[in-house]
Every structure is written in structure tokens, then in C-alpha cells.
Length: 177
Length: 283
Image 1 (tube, rainbow over the protein chains, first blue to last red):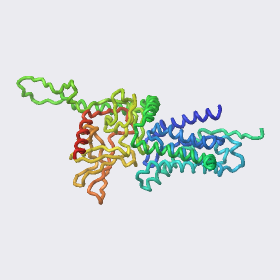
Image 2: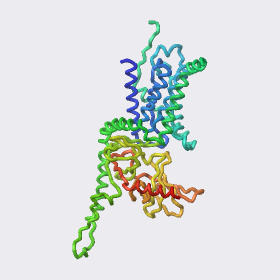
Image 3: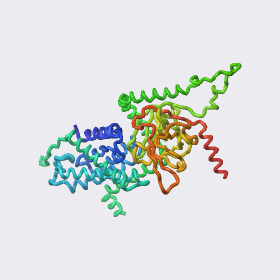
Image 4: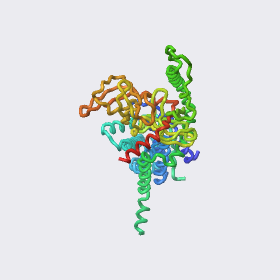
């Protein structure tokens, strides 16, 4: 299956799972909202052009927004992490040329520690911006902080589970054809 | 001129990012005021379709609870039937009352329309429900929505076959409510923190309130008939700087499980509002 078709299927699945499974979970605590959908942006291939990445983030966020009736909220957060992603990848990739030898960011392509850093930073960034926008009108700092941390914790847990359940095979591609 | 083009080309990625952010934030902040955007109309129809497909599956799991709620409501309504009440008959002759049958609709104040919930959120800062009943079936903007157990929210956007309801769990939602026991009127709103509680403000401290007291809709609401359950008092916050209590209420509706709702139309609402606004202008 081509990478493009695969990503379109992923797009649909992430949106549906977020809207019809995770948003339906009964609220456990006021700080906790299970978010997983943005993992789609983290999984996009290395060779996506930067412009395409930002645009995909925008469209992806907006799609979710039309299910939650909050046009622009998730779109803004997704655009931000999609824009920041290439900078992080450049800093964190340890082996030279890993972004050419592998298709997309994962534990095998980037190594455990860099990949974990990559996920944690982008998750934190996404949630901080999202909660910040939600709480722009009035905010108690403690609540803002608690919600960012609580939501990030749950998201990271969900990401670990997803990574373990849906292991993505990464073929080593050499550029010496 | 050439330098400007060079600049744009060089920072095109960044400029595009800024553009996307601006569009997103524009959507977000305009939406609160102009949520009837034509674009949203189409989106409601589309996401509503998805929602109703999914709901077919999920509906099955809530059948038991839904059934219980409906049976309870039936019991309540049956108890209110006229034939349950009898007084010794002192009439000399039988007179047929011509008022209760109102074929022209002049006396009717509220009209009720049932609808099924197809999409629902509780965990966000501003929560909405989508119901499978729209303009073609008589649902219009600014109608009240109730469930078998209590109030749910207000219709804010409609398409042909679906309508979006702003739930009580929405930071802009305000409902006029009163203490059932004393009739003291206050305002119910949501602070956006926990979906398990809503807040009631403007209840003076002279009021004697106990935990578990019922709060119902007041007679001053445009949307709801009076006496519909809003919630029960679960915590009384005594703010020393104010003459008013802040009450934490447990909502009567379980927003997580709501399956069927009833849309209430106040037929005289427009007339009443028009009169009130005309009075304001004259002064």
C-alpha cells in the first residue's frame, strides 16, 4: 500500500477513534481529557514537505473541530505542532541521514530516547496551546497547569499503548540503489 | 519589490504557518458570536450523519437506562392525569368545558417535539449535542431542550435535518432557575471545570438552603416552562466577600448518557421579547 493511501486511512481512523471512542469516555476527573488524535501528525513521513505538513495539520485539526463544534481550536494547536515538528526532527535525529533511510519517526528510526523526547515535547506543546486557547477568557493558573499536566500524562500513556499495539515496521532504505 | 518577493519566498513556510494560525483563531473567536455561518450548516449535516450511524451502535448499550428513564417519566405523567383526582361531585348538571380543546392554538404556550441525540460531548470546555431533528421538522434556533430527568440546553444552530444544542455544560449558557422550596430565583451557569457539577449564583444569604435541595427552572425563563428539574444542591460555598451564596449543583440530567430529548418551543417568546425591547427603546 502506498504511503499516501495509508495516511489517508490513518487520518480517518484517528478522527473516528478520537470522536467516537475517546470523547465518549466518561469524565474521570476535571483535569483529564484523553487526546490521542494528534499522534497522526507525529507519524507523518519524514519526506513530507514543510508546507504540506503545516497544511495537513490545519486540515486535520479542522476536521476534528467540526465534530466537536469548536471551529479553529484543534486546528490552531495541530498547525503549531506540525510547524514545529521539522525543527525538532532536525535537532533530535542522532544517526546521520536517518531521515532519508527511514520513512517516518518511530523508535526504530530515531532511537528510543530521541523519539520519546520528540513525542513528549510535541504533546506538551499541543496541550499547552489547546488548554491556553480554551482558557483565554478567564483562567486560574493552577487549573491551567493541572489540566495541561493531567491531559499530557493521559495522552502519553495512550501513545505508549498505541505504539505497542500497532507496531510500525520500519524498513531500512539505503540511498545507494 | 524584488526584495519583498525574495523575503516572501524565503520565509514562505513561516508565513503560511502564521496564515493558518490566523485563520484558525479567526474561526475560533468569531464562532462564539456568529455561529450561524453557512459553512457550519453544511458541517452539521455532515458530522450529524456520521453521528447517527455511530449512535445506532452505541444506542444498544444504553437501552436499559433509557428505558428506565422513560418508564419513570411515564409514571410521573400518568400521576398528573386529570382522571387520578376526584372530588365529591357537587354539580347539579354536567357542563362541558369548551376551553381545554384549543383547535386554533391561541391558548397554547409551549409545544413539545421529541428528538434523538446522535452526537454528544461532555469532556470539552464548551459542550454541544447534535439531535436528529432540524428545520424541516420544526426545530428552530433558541428553543429549550430537556431530557426525561431535567434540562439539557438550548438550540443554537440548525440544518435541514439536524440541530446543534448548546448544553448546560457550556461556558456561555445561562439558565434562570429557582429554589423549588422557597421560589428564590438565581442563575445557573457552568464554570467549565468539572462536567459533574454546575454552579448557581445570585442566591442571597438570607435563604435557608440544605444539601439535596432541588433547583428547578424559574417562571422568568424564555426557553423553559417553569418547574423543570435543573439539579440538586451538593455544596454551598459561603463567600465572605459577597452577600450571595454560590451553590454547586449536581445536574439532574446525566449528560453522558442522554439518548432522547424533548425540544420545547415557547410560542409567545418572540411577542414577549418584542414588547420588552420596544419598552426599553421608548425610555
